[in-house]
Length: 398
Image 1 (cartoon, rainbow, N blue to C red):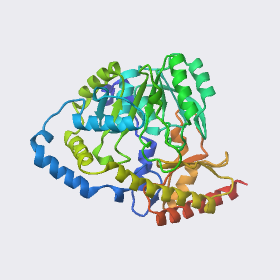
Image 2: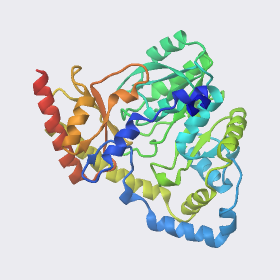
Image 3: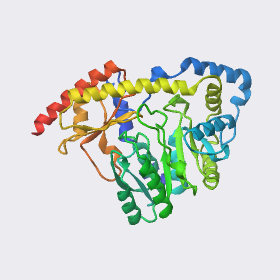
Image 4: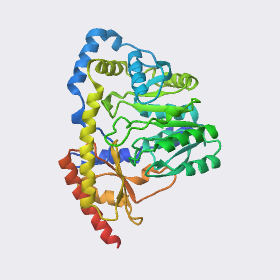
């Protein structure tokens, strides 16, 4: 009966369906396109080793001591400098280092959401954001997307239907799970709508630096004149996810509250990891490292699309992302990808069924593929197995 002591909020806490899927796919015989994992062979292990040694040699005691909640100043300055190159003029005072961008989502939910508040989001959207906001008993209002991102006419309709919505959550660059990118016109329009309807935008950008095709677009925060955009990002996709380093960029009023909540949560992000990241950027060329990542991911994306064309049923629809980690696949309406997933596991191949990415609706005929984590030969073999299952399912449904 001890569970009677749980808080009311605890009933909204449940393990992510996808995390449970990933446990199954960790078996070495499984070719997994399920996780959003960077390629481990691209981690700069030797360079990080050198940065660790330099940190311990130069400032070992400080690197192992408690530190400030806001984060290591040289790292925040390096982030501010990087943000300026993409059109966000900010200062270290407007930056908070977090335990990955996932902590940024949690702190955002904690700061803004009361029971029953509404979050406006893309449909589909990032499942771990759904999980983070559901903990605070949020409701969700989904906005349909097309190949150019969130449809602005639909967003305005939703804003009118939910005038007290706390914020719009969006991933404008290589969206998770669809891989789609919001075009320039819509980035300007979403900012205009946020101003007009007096709401906040939470711009989540874990993938923006991993653009390997097309023209780079300014972040939504570039157009923010009223301090309405909270910008989240991370080193996970361009450096090393195990270090758990992300950041929040927000106006000073928001930042004071974020710092207070962060301090209550964990005092500060791992200071040794922060110093190592800053030292790495001092000693080595992060941009050159990102270029290596992009070249590999472009080849893997192209190989996966080749395999979709070669192995999947002809009625399959799929996205063709210009960056990021994911391809979104849509099958005929009468096919349930959870059933497909179960069959695929028998053939030692895995993906993420799409249903988990819809907080209120349920499109059972979709799934997400990750191309970043598997080498090209494994992509070909895994996609061949997946295609065999899909073609059999398509025949059975005729």
